[in-house]
Length: 312
Image (cartoon, rainbow, N blue to C red):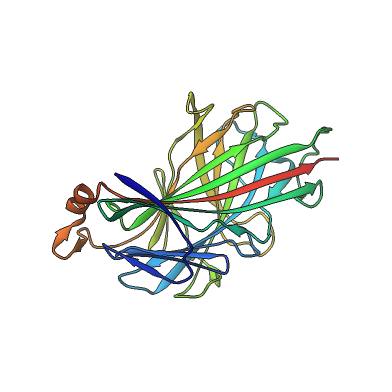
């Protein structure tokens, strides 16, 4: 039997298996035995902040920066800053006050198996507010109708992998200028001393090996395919890294999607911390046994950005 319960949490709620969560003033905090994570949406763009819970030191930060179409001039499916031109304006994720839904928990045999929550904001944007023009951009040939863009960011934690968390991107409503363009999501990466809520400095370097980016003791892994049309077909994905596109921006990761028409895109990268212990136990029971006992649990967060802007 699965029990659903909506719980108005205002302070940290300890659960079995070294699992805690809380929400305060637009900031959700989650810890497992291995990783600590904050998701911030209080008057700023969505912001992931995470650290090694077993040995806190440097904290890592990823900001959801902007979404834009690029012309992929060398047809390599990778966004190359300084080579590929951005088509039209870059859609910057809004800085706004976000409504927190409260936590929704699922329980099985008195064990919490899932936790759900979301942040939601809805804004109307005209060209020049939600869109940012940068040097070298091509002009949009003229979207005369409003473009409704919705972005959902869903976060998952799994008991079997307590050193990492997955977030799903869902993008719908994008109106393409060219069918041979790529759609690029830019993330900026920074770091800070432990428990500092903002990124204080650039990471010293970003290394890429296969589909994994490493920066300090943190990493981001991306899948080479997304899904569109309710998972009816795959969309090719490539990623690159480089300097930020604007002055004083941190180093950036660029996730590029091939043309997917007017369908909804679903994609799921992973963020994590290393090195960590390979065996995580609670009361002498390893986490694989706990998964069997508890039926596994996941933590799911949904941040929904429903935006509307008009291009002139």
